[in-house]
Length: 312
Length: 312
Image (cartoon, rainbow over all chains, first blue to last red):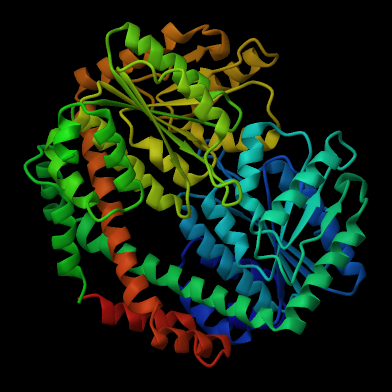
């Protein structure tokens, strides 16, 4: 099967293979991406993030179903933290998403955080492009928003939604705070829990302090995703934001920034791999490390010397 | 005040200034690090990580006091997640650590995750070296182990301790699993909670599956850090691990790997900054991004072209 043609002809198996090629860096990955790039740029990309346990997967599931009701096809990329021990993504999430898989208008893919998250961020971006080229109207990319790198994955979406829940500890609050500034909309999930009003006020107050939200005021919705409550209002808010971005012309700026970020990440990645292969993996470098360990030399001039040799 | 001389003469203010210089990338930062590098390599470095809410700060505090009882001086670097909204590290942690500050044999420094964690990892490594040059016997570096980048910070320590607590949700368990493989020792904190035995068995089972732990079997200790219970046994385990590393010669390999990682990170960082300044920030690059946005060109050959121009 020709994967590129398959993706363009809405063949789901081809899409799955293309994402696998990108994820595992198969030899044909760049070729596939190069051929499909001209067919991208049509999907609307939604990033969903929030702390562990916020119910993001359930919410994503329900949002996808609501988009389907509104006539949109939906691709979902779930970026999961994994363990080298357990060797896989969070099983619960995968099972939850299975009940979507009978619908031809929905495609779900988990991507696991093997090794460097930096690399994953790029691969997730490529998966978005593949789903875009396939023709999905909406692409939802969902991550646990706990580390900076994971936040990087979603923050280049057209609309970024931050999911929070009431009643988490102080430590969690702090992490949550770290991702609050990237939210175009907020959803308080598990909103039947105690502390919902307090959390709502806290978010309102944080938004007050943020001077960036002048023309778009992030709405705060409440859901009980497990019961399907409040889902329509969230999709309404996403569509409002899409309308705002389109009418204000902001969408062009956002997408330009996304491309800029992506190409910069590709550049850094390629150069870093070059250094790994041609500098770090050499016997000469090993000898330098041993001299450093003996404190015969110091690393700052070593780095300057190498950079001088590597760069034009 | 000459900062370098100050640090070498155990002047705490000089140490604080040196870390600030590194953290904020002041002009004198490289000069300070270069001058002090020959005086590093004597401290024993302990990394402490674990999920949010595991009580790492309290545990670190108690461990530091126990090391003091055993005649060791202790430097602590607490890497905190921060919010651009709140603008600071987790206040609770800082307050908790304040009661250590009356002891001249202890030095506590918080470093906040402003922007890129990659950069922070390097800065935290530099702070370790500064405390090392100052002359602390033990340096504890503590982070919330939720993102890959944060794990990177602690995993190059001589001894890495993973702190877990019973009774967290599945989502948290998965993140915890992601950091389990880096533990030289495990501490179940809040061990008066229900689920402690179950968690202990789970960790044991995960360790069984890991073929790496042949010569060193990571011990699992139990603490109630808030009450000071179980602390001595943890310090005993740390000292056991230090003894094992020293006698087996593993310590030399670990420290060589740490230097190699550090220099590689410095190289990547320097080259990426070069690219940011000389490629990404140019009008030419901006024009390329606009062509990419119009899908007139594709990014893979653009990246190859630029890399060809940048590298020798």
